[in-house]
Every structure is written in structure tokens, then in C-alpha cells.
Length: 239
Image (cartoon, rainbow, N blue to C red; front, side, top):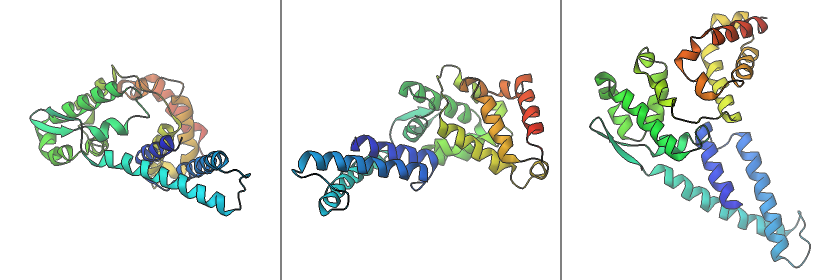
């Protein structure tokens, strides 16, 4: 239980970009308390009480085990791994593979996906030169985020990398998408006429009716379905 909690803490923190988000800390604390209770009940002859030195002792044991697991899990991310040679560059894909675990459950599919989009990026001589250091420095995910806002994104055909991947919706993915949209819309003219929080919630609710593989493609975003969803959410979110 503590092993799973420590590993999940690091995975979730890396996904959300912070170790101190409430949605991470609260479940961890509950797990530590439950583990403390189970350990204490198994080792103590007397009934374990929350407000007791015995409880604090077993909580300390639980926390140390959790911290050790979290430390080694974090260490595994720090050391570059899963090196591949793509277009003459030796690129570690470890962080990319681990960072997409919530969206693409299958590890082999994550590896193929990361290799695919890195190859698409490095096929372009200009982008290859621009991002070589980052790619070789195990920052493929950072590069992908930058590329998404580039005019060249549509030309690269990265959406083709999703064809053989089984992606799935999760609450964290939906939340991350919403946060990105809100960030992009904050301070724009759209915000003066529409409630961007309601607009984003509307988009998420509608998009979740479709397979994630589909909504991640450029073809879908340009489709009548997507345009209809956008028009509907724009209208519903007007102030």
C-alpha cells in the first residue's frame, strides 16, 4: 500500500507539475493514516488510539517507508533512460514514456508514440537544430508543448502518431486541458463576453463523449462536430 502510494505520489506530481496540489496531498495523508492504523493494529497489543504516542510512532514508520519509495521513484525519473537514436540524435525517452502513463496505459504504445512524435519533429531540420539540446536532455515533453503553439505543428503530422495508440480520458487529463484553455483565454476579448470557466467545462463535457484519440487529431478540430461544439459552448457561456 505504501509502495503504491509513494509511486503514485511521484507520478501524479509530475503529471500536474507540483508536489503540493491538494488533490495529491489529501489522498496521500489519508493513505498514510490508514497505513498507520493497519501497521499499529497489527503490531500493537493494545487498541491503537489516534491521540497517542504509539500512533505517532507508527505514523513515523509509515511516513519513512513512503518517503523512501517516493525518493527512489523520483530518482528513476531523474536518471535519463530508454535511449533511442532518431535522425542521428541519441534521445532519452524515459520522461516522455513515464509522463504519458495516465493517458496511454500501455507502456509499449507510449514508447511508440514518443518515438513517433520525436521523429516527426526532428524530420524538420530547423526544429531539429532548435530543440536538439532539449531532446537530448530528456525534455521531449517540454518540446512537444512548445511545438503545439508553433505554426508548424499542423504541418508536422504529429496527430498520425495517435493512430496506433489507445488513449483514455482521465479526470487529470480533463483538468489539465481545462487549465491550458483558461490560461490561453485569460485576458482575451473572449473573456469580456463569455464566462471562460463555463465555456471550458462545456467543451470538456462534450469532448468526453468522443474517444480521446479522435479529439486529439487536427481533423477532428476542423470537423463540423468540433465547430458545432464550439458554437454551442460559446453561446451557452455568454455573460
